Image 1 (cartoon, rainbow, N blue to C red):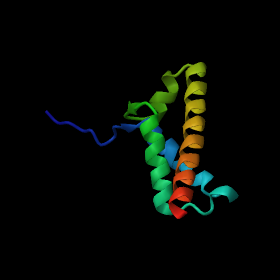
Image 2 (cartoon, helix red, strand yellow):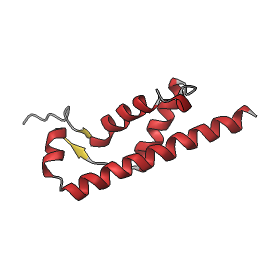
Image 3 (cartoon, helix red, strand yellow):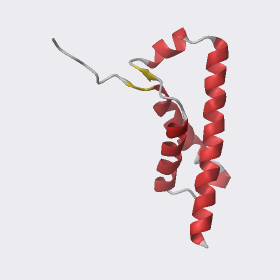
Image 4 (cartoon, rainbow, N blue to C red):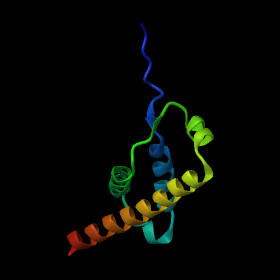
Length: 95
């Protein structure tokens, strides 16, 4: 029997990475280093539930609109928290 787990991934990973890179371009985040952005990504992913899928399109097809909106809001909230958390920690360590 052959097994192929290459396509299995956490649905949130791509969303978090794309949004972190997008937010890194905002004026208030231009001082974030690559390491800081990686910390933001890890913090955000650890605060979100794992949603493993083989194909992202399958996830979107089976979600009801209220669940999709709740996931988007959770992503927004956790990224706001993560950027602020890392920003505060870096400010404290710079003192």
